[in-house]
Length: 154
Image (cartoon, rainbow, N blue to C red; front, side, top):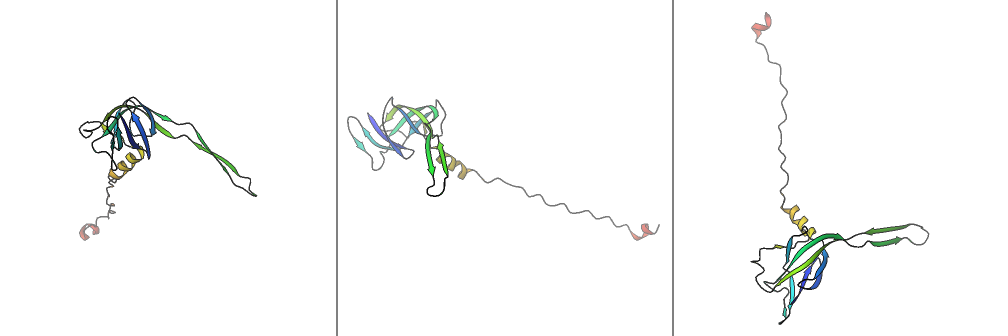
């Protein structure tokens, strides 16, 4: 049985036992995650979603968080300017091993859904309450106590 899942803006055709490199997920090594965005299921019978197959899921175990090979981008300004610059970065990825493909019953599996780190950061930022700042009233300056006229004459 195979499935086509969607994560990180890409689509992957997977079978049980496959190892995948996907965009960084908010999960630690050894944790089990579940992909709920299943576009198609295949095997004995073909099921195509419109756009997703309801109740289907792919479960995977996180092997580790890795970095891809360095991508180098060369920037050069032309004509009478002699400026050149080399830029580069290493994309952060999550290495997964597909353990199971569920055709139905994904809601009752109890496995946490795979969430992209950018989505998780956005959700945490929107859900966090604004910090409460307590206002302390300014202290009033103390005035010297007036003495009664009788005491002042003595």
